[in-house]
Structures are given as C-alpha cells and as structure tokens.
Length: 433
Ligand SMILES: [Mn+2]
Image (cartoon, rainbow, N blue to C red):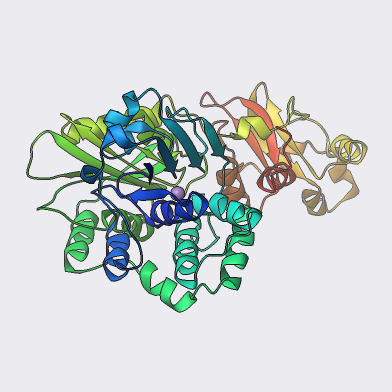
C-alpha cells in the first residue's frame, strides 16, 4: 500500500499537495491528520464524495511500502507515522517547499523554496501532462493563494505565478476559491481579539516593538492565528506573540506574527520546537507556563537571533569626515573632489553634525567661506545603530527626508555611513551573496 500524508494542523497547501500527489502517484491514498485547519475541514465536509481519504488509525504500518510526504520535512509534524519511521524497507518520497531542512530522509526528494508547496506539485503535473479536474484546480489554486498571501508574500517565486496561470487555464474557479479563503471569524474570535488588545504589553527589544499577550482560553478556538494576525495589524507592532493556555495546566500554545525585516518568527518557533516562516509561526510548549514562555521568547529575540542583513553589512567605512573647524571653502572643495553631496562632521570619534551642499546656500557674504563648518552644519543628526535592519534605515530616510545615515554604536562612536543607494541596492536584492 502507498500512502501520502502531510503536517498536523493541515492547511490548504498541505491538503491540496496530498491530492496532487494522488495524481502523480495514482496508487497512493491520502492519510489526513486528525487535526486540520477549520477552513480545510469545511472544504472537506462539502467535498466528502470527491476525495477519498483515510485517517491515521485506519492504516496498518506493516502493509505500507511507500510513504509520500508533502509540505513538511519533519517526522514530529506528522500524525500517526511513528511506526513507519522505524520501518526499514519503507520507500519515502518527499516534496517540500520550506527553506529549512528537516529530519525526514527520503529515497527521492523534491525540496525547493517556493511560495507554496502546491507549486512544486503543479510543475510536475504539467511536466507529465496530467490534467486536474476543475474542482482539483480550484483546490490547488486556493492553496497557492493561501500560502503566498495572494502572491503578495515576499516568498512568492515566478514559478508560483506560473502555476496560478496554469490552474486558471484548467478551470479553477476564483469565486469558489475566495469563499474558502474567507477567514473564520466569529464571536469567540472577536472576544479573544478584544481581550488581547486590552492586555497590551508592548516592549522594546533590539529596537523592535514586540507585544506579548498571555491569555487563558476556554476549550477549542479555531483561527487563533488569524486573531493574532489582526492584533498585530491593529497595534502596528513589529511582532505580536499570543501565548495561550487551555484548561490543562502546564501547556502553552504560542503563535507569533511579524512584518519586520530581520525578525524571523519561524526561527524562534523552531528553537521552541515548533515551526513557521519568517513572518508567522507557532509552537506548543509542554510543562511551560505562560510567563516562562514569554521569557524564552524574549531571550531568543534578544540574544541568539541575528537579523539576516544588518545596517553594518551595508554601510561604507571608513567614513570620510571633516572636523568642526574645517573652513567652508575647504569643505566645498572636498565635496567637489569626492563627488558627494554631504559629509559628516566629527570630533574625535563622535559625530557632531552633517554638512551638505544645500548648506552652502546659507553663506551670504564671500567672507563666509572662511567660517568654520560648525557654523553652517546641521547639528541635529539622525543616526542609526549597526544592528538595525535595512528596512529601518529606509524608514528613517523617508521620515526625515535624508539620503545618508551615520552608523553610530551605543557608545556614540561613528563607525560607518549608510546611504539611500546602499539601502536601495539591498532592497532590490542586488547585494552580492
Ligand atoms: Mn505550505
């Protein structure tokens, strides 16, 4: 017997990838984890007749010869596959789009970073000229839209958009699709959102606004991730962590959402035994109370986590600078020679001002050229720390309408300068690896 399975908390990408796998491997039967996402549950209950699926307790490990795993790469995220893990003659085939590498070693692997896992499956269907039905195409496109945020998440690849085009060609219905993607948001979710907003506790960690919300919840509540997402949008925090506890003591469920460059929620959740992407993730913590969970996340945020790229990676140094007593005439000549529009003014290691070409207009008399630069420089210098992200540099530049930011350490020493073009180059991904 051949089976195909995916991760617990099955989302559309996982479910759609399982169905797509049955087209690629016609003998494979989907085994759906017990715990599935509410939108998928609703979809499955309407399409019961269309998709033939099994639950983990309906399979016998001894009879399984081939296991196909989609949209996940770790054994502990599968449901009811413990016996199979030990099976020696089992053939394993893995399809995954998550950038990290898991512990499932397979005989055959298709592991490429894509916006959605279904994109990998669709590419193979196209290559083998296998036609999905319109219902299947609709399901696949739903998955694609969910995992790529309607192709808006930065993880989206050209291949994802190609897959979307092909699925539309195969009759995917956008009206049906958007009704499935409509979030489940009811009275329960609203109450939790309000309670989260009331218990706001925003702290500054490594220059980011991070909000923690510790909440006890009664019984099962679906779409908690959506609630955390909405909470982050309303608070406009860089990241929000919901730490939820149920009736059972000693168990915390953490959901994190972020939209800040340089904050990797997935990395934090993986350190806690969970999973996710840069912008979203979750973890279940056993024998950890909510206060400890908050402490653990804070530690991870403060210490071990490194922003992917920091201002110190982009800045230029050493910086060409002038002292406060340099004459304006000399500064003018330097600007022309160096071909730049401004220079920092430093005293020792400390920055005291910025002089730019614009400031030369302030010189009224010819004798003004002999005056020292400190008389004309702008002493209100906006600076940035070396650990900040390129996005934060860009935000400061837009906010203060400036083209260069001196990079200053906590001790107040200038160690470099980051310019608008440095940030642009980075944001457009032209930075050499
Ligand atoms: Mn996925």
